Amino acid sequence: MPIPLLINPHSGGGRGRRVGQVAVERLRALGHAVAAEVVEGAERLQERVRSLREGGTELLLLCGGDGTVHRALPELVGGPTALGVVPAGRGNDLAQALGFPTRLDRAIRALSKAMEWQTVRVVDLGRVNGRYFATAATCGLDSRVAEWARRTSRGPLPSWAYLLGTIRVLLSDPPRRIRLVADGRAIHDDLALMCPALNVPRYGGRFQMAPLAQMDDGLLNYCWVERLPPCRAALLIPRALRGTHLDHPAVHPGTARALLLESDPPEAIYADGEPVATTPCRVEVVPQALRVLVFPPALAV
Image 1 (cartoon, helix red, strand yellow):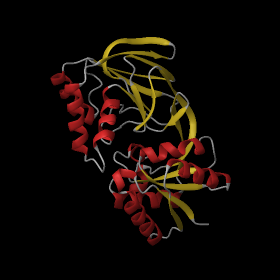
Image 2: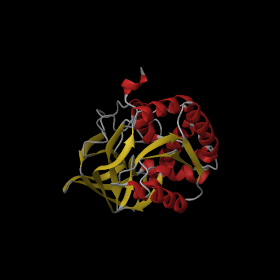
Image 3: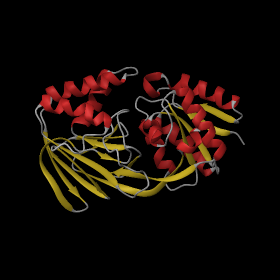
Image 4: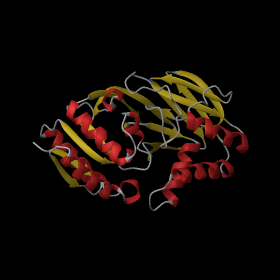
């Protein structure tokens, strides 16, 4: 039976259709029987994923970004269908966390090897007020940058644009009071830049905010960052890109199974780059929730 490949044509600001076409051609050239379908809209995507899961599909390929995967998660959680990702988004944080390169030609070769060797792994997910996410839930500066990107972009944004947006938000938006409760214990309650909860090491495509995060440890990694003057906060950006920020005195990392986030005024919460809630909210890990195709380093040789 051909392996279904659902394509979100709007991923990555409109590059999803082209990426999907290339992926189909190259996977077929590598010997894989693939049945491609362009899917418009979140509801239609969920309908198709549900139908394929109920029909006994063992492996489903999605061509899109983290937002595409986010919309498909409710139909895949706890089920037998494994998910393979063709990265076509802006950040592709999940694909990177699963070991896949971001360059399309290399990503397709890696996906082909993973399909051949059937390297399936069961990973955790996060959940915000009942909404599942695969990568990160953001609160504070990073959510406001995501809002800025959604307001200002009608197409693909390069990485430097997100850096520019981060600096813009730093200069224009004052820190807010954020209260963090981790596993029932009050941890912080003060003015803060941000407090993301992560299931993966990096988010935003490049920021290694939780370099020690693992997707199968039954924990979320959080990173509460104190209020800093904009110039000092900007100096943290290069360190966050490299993952060397955790020993900064204003950065307070930790792990927990469940977090409670409150803020004054209320903050938007983004998960997998999508707006999902506002504070107050509960963020929790859902262990062993999703079967995924991974590309272990051993296959790269």
